[in-house]
Length: 397
Image (cartoon, rainbow, N blue to C red; front, side):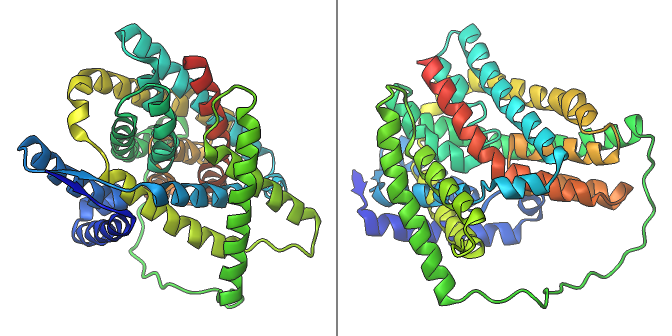
């Protein structure tokens, strides 16, 4: 029996999946510790249930993915608004250096994935589906680029990439702390600090004004206009004969808007409201994508995927220790940044922040690391990662 869900049922089920994921995460200290995203938790529960029902011959779910594509474009348009050259300059030379290292890691992740896949005698696109798409990109980029990989001939690309992204989240949490501790103690000569427990009270900045309906209205207009212009850009890019996902056009359009606003004072980009809309779009996009995972398609790829993913973890450790740490200054701040790089290089920025927070509690503070890592990991690297992925997609086919 096939249960065919229209767009309304699909979105309604996505909301229930998010609510389930939130409830489970609130009950589990381990899931909170590893910073596993809510849609991943709820989506995996539903996917496992759907796999059991499918394997038992009871039923199979089919979904309407129209709004999934819409939410995807809205999210990536929001990312493009963060690609401000002015903001990048304010961070100084270290931001550029850290970004260059992160871009190098992205290139190496894809080269390793394609190379190992070729050695294993499997489709090179599987290497891309376990490269920087799920590693540096995480679940959002995995869900966005999977349809492009499937269009190029990789069956089950969405399931492969999302499974790899989930593995990366856990791996990034597990190796980030040990790598940071090794660098702090063995390379920087630090010893753990004995600290007294202190109460931390949450305070809200007095000069931070509440968002208004006007802010969200303007933000919605800006995102929709970026999506529309991005669609035009995507059409022009495809005329080059190369493969470009729609997300690239959306990000280029919104990046254009935000950099124009930097030099034209009358134009105001509602960044806070855009971030909220983008985050909501990402949650719904990921929930729908996770719901459509077909785990039974991974059976034949289990061993090759394990090999590919272990190689990615080893690569990230080597990059953190022998590239990120020495190039960022060989000091404690560099150790913090290396630990953070393990977090977002294999999983997500929340994982990176959790890794650095652990080091901070043990060895001391590094405000510079807490500024640069999320700036690069959550803002700029997504933009460059999409470009690098696009290049490799066209090389691999």
